[in-house]
Amino acid sequence: MKNILSITSPHNPKIHMAMLLMKKRKRDESGLFLIEGFRELSRAQIASVNVIYLFFCRELFLGEQEEDLLEALSLQGSVLYECPVDLFHKISYRDRPDGLLGIAQQMDLSLQTFNLRSFCPDPLFLVAEAIEKPGNLGTILRSCDAVGVSGAIVCDHCTDVFNPNVVRASVGTLFTQPVVETTSKELLPWLKERHVRIVAATPHAQEEFTKADLTGPLAIVVGTEQLGLSDTWMKEATIHVRIPMLGVADSLNVATATTLLLYEVLRQRNRS
Image 1 (cartoon, rainbow, N blue to C red):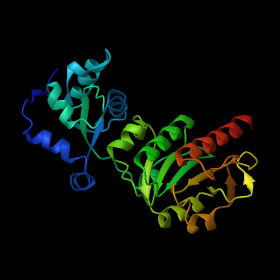
Image 2: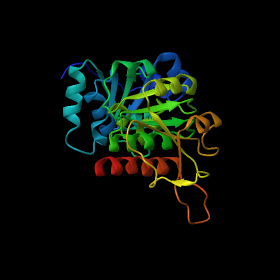
Image 3: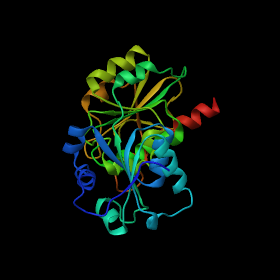
């Protein structure tokens, strides 16, 4: 295995770089981001994400396939840095690290990347408008992957897709599906040009989500945890649906609601 170096000092510039990338400003300036964990890095490697540097600590490995991943990333050109346990804990953002953390080049998430793709006749898009919490956004991406959406679109984002906690909550599914970041102003005409119906999920709708026709080209739009969807999406939506709430709470967590809506689409499409 080539490109393996050893780091023992906490003052090493690469260690300093990894710690700075926890901050959005540094990620934006550098165009880099962190990927931690075996599953996350494995999925990034399969998707040919450019992992420039990989820090590893064999004492923290949890399985038997980590060496294969090191070999695969080395062959792809990653520079590997072996670290002692205490130094790895210094750069890890997990309570129980598994000994693998990479610094990668950010992918192109512009809407133009969708224009280069061929979608099925009845595409399904998930639009997440102004989601505030990284954990929710990562979980939404995980549900999108599970259902096999045509694309996940982060609209008017409040949370950076490259936030380490988005990567962690998505369990690496950020790399397994088409994901873009854009604005409502840019996305709405893009959807209309492709005759994609817009489904707004809101507690104030009259129609339950299981009663609506969710077949055909579709974009499910979910909104912020606190305020829900903006007036722009509420006005542009062709279908408004709600999830029944029988208790004292008036809405579900946005990631939970997204999962229910996506699986209802999948159920209807499988039935038809």
